[in-house]
Every structure is written in structure tokens, then in C-alpha cells.
Length: 228
Image 1 (cartoon, helix red, strand yellow):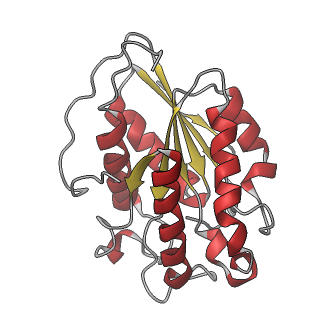
Image 2 (cartoon, one colour; image 1 turned 60 degrees about the horizontal axis):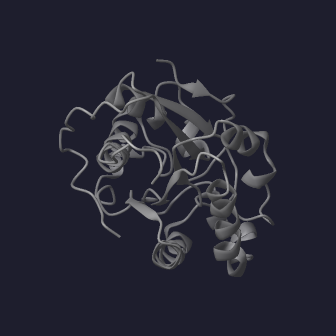
């Protein structure tokens, strides 16, 4: 089954938590009909290096009973006042039209750039609006928001660890208040800087680690009855 991929634009991004990324995943259960997974994000999702996109690796783990759509777009921000808001992009429209059963949101890396993070007081509200857009879909998807992947010091491209730590606190609060699924991509990967050779984007090994962490959550969902 092919991943539905968006055009690759080289831009810059990025609570029950999971076991270490090195754990070998088990075979995903076979749902009654194909489960549609929308991966929403920036260049950490779409990947500026061919073959390093975690959604294609997630598709391989999940198998043919799942359809993984890559709706990442390089350089996008979650913040509506950021320099390149995801909510204004065609990828956002297509992710909704995909009518997913599961949505994985990995945004926030580009928001840490100083000229974007000056709007940090609006991060929680803008994240809430993004989640609400998917919650209102007819497919009633399960929504998982991700703690962002680590930014090995000193970071790069203006993306930095200090602001990311502030983001994580906001994300954790949203998970609690909105009763969302959460995937921690930070803690299991923070001591593995070799997975992020430019100190932002994952290499092939890093993309595989991200895919395994996502898989460990969504493969456990019972899709026998979609009226959850």
C-alpha cells in the first residue's frame, strides 16, 4: 500500500508514554477495514532527505490493512502568526479531506524560532483550534499530539531546545485538558543525538525510531467497531 505523500518542500520544523524506540514492534492487529492515518507536521514529518520520512516507515510496520497519509509540509508552524502557518496550507485541507481514523500531529519545531516564538502566548489556543478542526470531521478520528523530537544543542536554523521545553509544558497541559492521546518523541530520543545529524531533522535511523514510537500507540487501538 502506498503512502499518500504531499510534495516535498525542504523547510525546517519539528500521558502514557512508550517504551524505548529500540524495542522491536509486534505485528499490528488486522482491522475490519483499512484504517486511515493522517501524519500532520513539518519537515520532520515529510523529511528533507528522501527515505527519511517516518510515515513511510510507519506504513511498513502497520501493513496493508492501514493507509498512512503523509501530510507534512516543510517549514510550517503551528502558530497562526508564525512565518508559515500550517493551518493556511493546502496540506491541512487535504488532511481533513482524507477523513482519517487517526491523526498524528507533530508540529512546533519552527515555532521555536525567536521571530515566531514571540507569539508563544497564542500557542495553546492555536493548537486547540487545529485539534478541533480534526475532531469535527465526520470520521471522528483518534487524535494524538506529539511531544516534539529533541533539538541537540546548540540547535540549528533558529530552532532551539529552550523554547521547545516551554512547548512541551503547553502540550502536556493540552493532553490533560482536552483528553487527547499523547506520544512522547522527546524523552526516548533525547540522548541519541546521532539520530539528528543536523540537530533538527532525523536521519533514516531516527525516522525509524519515530515510526516505532508512533506504532506502539496506534497499533493497540481496537478498530473493530468504529463507533468509539
